[in-house]
Length: 99
Image 1 (cartoon, rainbow, N blue to C red):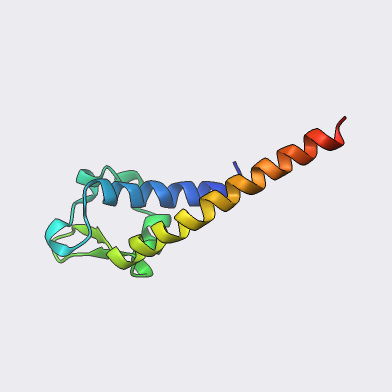
Image 2: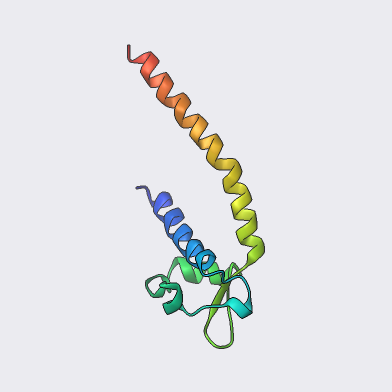
């Protein structure tokens, strides 16, 4: 996996943890232990917090900005079919030109 792919996978893992726990506001905020993200508390998690994607409460719980999550899901719903189509085209071209 490329470095970019690893970063995307880590970001996706963090976002999924918040989504699965429905931690999208202060009332639903969770601790790192509840989110099972203690390992991710450095690096990517910190960058997401600095950018305002993850918000920390006064009692050291966290939640994910709902607008960011919604916009990410919209982008993925557009990007995934395009990526799949391009993959099929590339495979078809490989098959055609390797005959």
